[in-house]
Length: 238
Image (cartoon, rainbow, N blue to C red; front, side):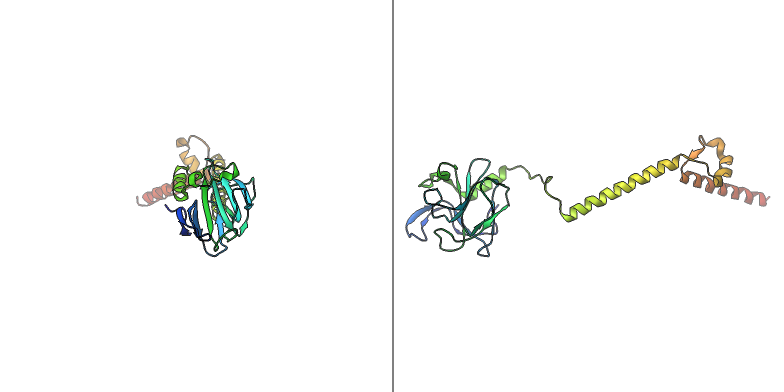
């Protein structure tokens, strides 16, 4: 799987010539680009927001510009840097896929992009280390992380308009069926109506009760008429 689907990878994890300082330096994350230049950015994993502002020198996010840092359930810190704007706040809990802000070029940057890195710890200094010992390769980490997550339970998510309509239709159908069953039960206790009494008298030796449903009395009359019609025809032929 590609955890960065929809992004263009412009600088991978590992050694490189720094695009600004022009020196050989280890790139602790990956640089990703999405269109448009200020396009929305979403959390790759859920967790608690520990940082959501401009990175200050000495904080662990110096020169990172507007930076969001989210600690996942395994204690790793996910860093999103150089953002043009931030839409979440410290202390907030976000879910995977929640919007966290927009792509930008704040801090030391050569153009709009997302610098994304994953630190092994969140303190001190938000897990900052001078060398690469404090980070992990983001692509493989996300692949492994997603593979270990249980299936998403959408039971608490709001229903779409289509799903809501479907539920309402089912409830209406169930209600109509309940009313029909109730009516049929009431009909089953219906005393013999006047228009069926002749048929009842004819068949009463075969009927255990004088009550029944409307359909029962109707069929009884139909059978009686058919039977009487056959007898009349036979007697006419004698």
